[in-house]
Every structure is written in structure tokens, then in C-alpha cells.
Image (tube, rainbow, N blue to C red):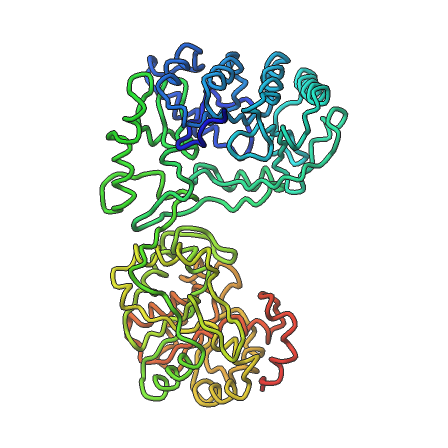
Length: 560
């Protein structure tokens, strides 16, 4: 009978050599693992998990725990790996194996084939519970292991035995590579039946444990590597259930999860403790307490992890006022108040605020904090443009946050801004929409509030180009087109030189624009400031947004 689907998971790291895993995949922070482990006291510095210790550990683990042979290193670098796989499978656990086959023998392959043929609990390429996954050397060298005749013979033996036993390559056995095109190393093409694997691998920084510069330098062909993340503040959750998906290392220690290559988060030792203690003991409590309260002393790996997210309790509704309401409000405020700011927060802003990088701006704690400071300003004259649940206008669907990310964003705002219930959200696509669909309204807005004003423009668009949209620019501050915030000390003094000479400030600097507006607001500058958004790129023939590609002729109609 098939066992219950797993409730918890234990990844098994069966070997930690002095220099780490011999396979040395570029996206695996083996330097961090080995350097940390090598500092352990001699009695705790066990290189290979013994079969006897493995049985002691496993006998404490409930059958509803999936045993995953992957961990921090290649499992077959331990000579007893096959015996361990057989032991947990015979015991009744759901078992998965992720291997490069480096270190494997033909007898190890025989065992894997035997389990593939099991009548009730076979390996499957499709079932995420119990895959047998073979990681093959790639053309881009992300898996830079030396391909020896022994390795090729083992791979050839696997293929022949699978064919002999009518086991499909892709049904019972899953193959993967890290090359973005799925290309395999030319050195194995005389053994493997194809040169390309249709499997997309997304590499991550392992909670910022990887050296991003080195990864990007050594593995340009790798799929989807985005680099490390920053600091996740507020009340966070683990989106991947890693609190119950732990990692065993050779000395019996249990680390929190597969991200912990620096061995920062020990939650127990299964040679000494029982399994229940792992999830209810002091080690786990230390972590969970700091996930809910970031003011407590002590760092945790979770706050710089890709899998950290935010849970929405449903205490407030994030809903953006529609185009007409936003337009009416701007007309009212701009027509009567001397200090009015219209600030537009997009996806990238929230990515940085949540501790991630963004396409046009890398992450930094300084930028993260300045954006949060801008977003939390509470004043009726500081108009916050966002994209939450924005209604349609004249039957047209507007840009909004998709449902799958809404709760994540709502949870982030709820857990990071104490006054979130007082926030008001206005349309951040107002000007983009009316310049295309309501050009008479757009012209009226420009002629009332933009073109007649004495103004300062801040951005990378050429002065002659932006003047076709906004009229005469009295003062112009040029900024870099990318990562402008990280050069702010070079151009910000010029902003301060000019701001008291104008009535209107027009930032077009991506998320650095929100920083400009926050700083000017805190300085109590009595000006209007309106973020124009990416429409300014169109007048400069820059195709930075997909929506602009076929709209140039339309936008030309409202230019001066």
C-alpha cells in the first residue's frame, strides 16, 4: 500500500569533505559549507555519515516523513548511500534521490532500477514526492565535474538497464541540466541519446550564501539566476514549508533547511534528540520568534531568503481608486494646495522593499529603507499611486497586481507599516492611460498643471525630447538610465540647487523618483511634484515598456 503523502521532509547530507562536494556545481555554495564545517570541534567533525548512525536517526523518524537524498552534497560520495536508500525504502518511507551519479557504482544503479520497478512505491519522473532525478553535466559548465571514463560507464549502464527493464527516460527517471538551453556537455554525447534536456532549472542564491559576482562570471549560460536578496523585515513566513523540511548532516545535526549552507540554523541532533524535539525545541523557537519579531537580537537566515514571504490576515482591503477618482482628486489638490506630490509605486518598488533586486535597480538596504519611508508618508497631499484591485475604466482593463501576488503584497504592507489601515491608494496608471485613451483630458491636464509652470526635470531623457511633452524645462538634472539611485550623491546636490527656483518638480528616474519626492517632502519644499512615468521614454524613442511599442503614433498627437 502506498504510504501517506509526506507531512515533513528530511534531506540527507551523507558526506562533507574538507573541500566540500567534489562535483562543485557553481550554484552550490560549497565554499561556505566546507569552511564552516571545518571549524567544528574534532568530535563533531564527522566526514561521512555511517550506516549505523543513519539507521539510529531514521528509526526516530515517522513514516510520514519523506527522506530526500540530496542535502548539501552528492549522495553517492558516501559508499553506503545505496544501503541507506534501500533501508528507508524498505522501512516504508517515501524516498527521492537527486544525484549527479558522481561516485556511483553499477551496484548502486542496480538498486535504483530495482526501486523503479517496485509495484507500489516506484520512483517517478512526474511525481514530486518520489522522483529519481539525474543531474547531467551541461555545455555551459555550471556542473564543472571532470567527466571520467568511470562516470560515463555508470551513466551508460543506467541507460542500458533502464531500456532493458522498459523504464522510460522521462517517466521513471527524470533528467536535468542547468544550461539555459538545456544543452548537455559534448563529453557525454557519445553515451546519452540526446544533446538537449527540456527541463528548466531556476538557480537561487541559497539565502544569499552564493557569491553573485562569481556565479554570473563563471556561469553565463545558467538559467534564470537573479542573485541574492536583501533583508526581509516585518512578520515573515516560509513560503516553501522549510520549517518542516530539514537537513541531516553527517554528525547527526539537523539544520533548518536546504538554504543553510553556512550551518547557521541548527535545530537539534537526531543522534541525541527525538524527532518531536526538532520542531518544538529551543532551536526552532529561536528561529520562529525572530521570524515574527525583527526587533529581537540575533540574525536568522530566513530574513535574507528567497522563500521568505508575507502572510495576509485580511484585516484591511487594498483597493485603488479608479482613473476618474484619481483625476478629480489631482485637479482638486493641484488647483488649491502649494505642496502636492503624486508618487507612483510599481512592481519594482515593492520588490526592493521586500528585499529583492529589480531589473533596473539592484537591491541595497539604503534604497529599501528610502522607498519604505516614501510609501508610508501619511498626508492627503502626498498621493500614493499603486496597482491594487484597480477597477476598469470605460470598459478597459487597467494594469493591476495579479491575484496570485495580491496576498503576498497585502501581507507585506500589513506587516511592515503600522499605519497601513489609513493608507489611501490612487491609480498609478492615470497619466499613462489618458495619454493613449483620453487625449483631450490629457491635454487639459498638461495645459493646466504642467506646461505653464516653472519646472525642474530630473531624468535621463534628453532635454529637447522631454520639452515636446511638458513644455519649457527651466532646470534640467541628468541622471543615469540605470541604477540612478546609486549615483544619487552625484546629482542630488543639483536638485537642491534648483528646487527653490521652481513651482513644479518632474522626476522620471524610476524608483529613485520616489526617493526624490520623499526627500523633498521631508524638507518641506512647497512645490508640486508629479511622476510622469515611462511615457517620457516614448518621446525619446526608448522602448522600455511593451505597452509603448505600438503607441508612438498615438502619443505623438499630444506632443508640442
